[in-house]
Image (tube, rainbow, N blue to C red; front, side, top):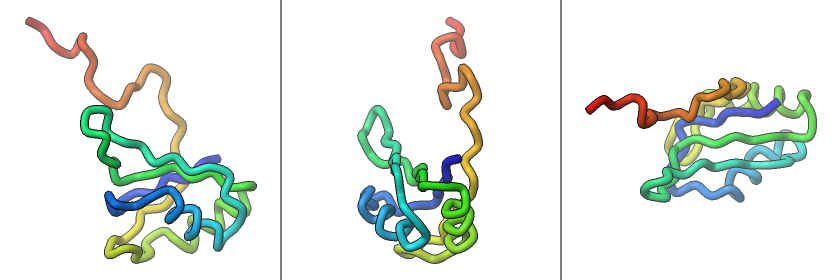
Length: 95
């Protein structure tokens, strides 16, 4: 299971997320996606913890919490759908 963390400050670093989530268990991995064009952080992240109990505890504690001037959206990440790149592809345009 992975945790989705939304409404993050764009200046946030992976270490910041590790610090906050480690209060609720062992953080295995943090992924902070960036925009391909600009390299700017996208305002959300995915966090994996050692087990589901720790992930559930983190979700319960942090969803709706105020952090860095923003209200966090924290929930179980939904699996990525096959073939969904998250954006438009070349076939979306007709000339």
